[in-house]
Figure 1 (cartoon, rainbow, N blue to C red):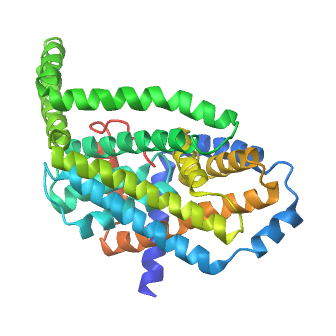
Figure 2 (cartoon, helix red, strand yellow):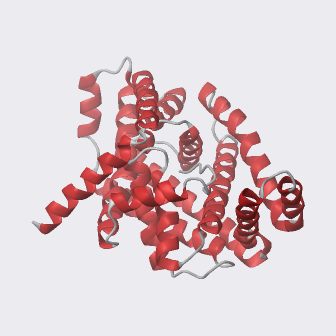
Length: 356
């Protein structure tokens, strides 16, 4: 009974949290609705339901466990990038990652990233801007891995897709440029200090002093890129975790009897996650389905089967981290009112975070 009351209270506070961000939420829902229409137009419901009835539940269970492993290794990558700032136990980081996934899956505007940054500061005293810098680095690593997966998979797959071309052409310059800037600032921290000195000359002291502290925290947050060991660990764990997630996609293909190879799974993971840059609803509902259906249809797979596959795969990668994350959030003694206050207080200091 206590759990039920606490759960209702959490959701009630969550609705208030959404209230202040209603515009972004509504806009995302409209975008998702548009992609859902594009994904499901022309679908025959009887064939779709028949495809769902043929799925192998035991393989879906294996796929879910595989995805959970991928989330844990994401936490290992986070630990590598944080080590230069503070060594946080992997168990603690894994819990925060699950909570962050839950937040991104349920609430708009990537609330999960802000949530795990806040909890990292609250639980482990990692300064806000340093933690945020590391999270931004994670997203840059993710984008680079996704691009490499797409390019690698296309060596083994003959597929003509306007969606893939659009995704890669729009995101490749963004991630390559941002990653180069990050490595440049990590290698030459005095460059950022020199830029800040020029900026501070024209700003009043009341603004200059906080900005100076923020720039120094950014430099510290980039420290993980300066260590060959930490950098190698972050790179390897990035490829491993996303490779395991591709294994989740491949297992679900087997559950539906789709005779497609692992390279197709790599292509789907890369395209779906890069499409996550589109400001859609929480969990990227509609966007994920559209990308998966478009690519698999271009490979000559039946529409009903690939539509069922897209829906179930999205459910597999959404459900487990959301349930686990919500349970862990309650164990943290965290209410959404606390999260709202943290977000309001920290929003001015947080740079924009693009996340998976």
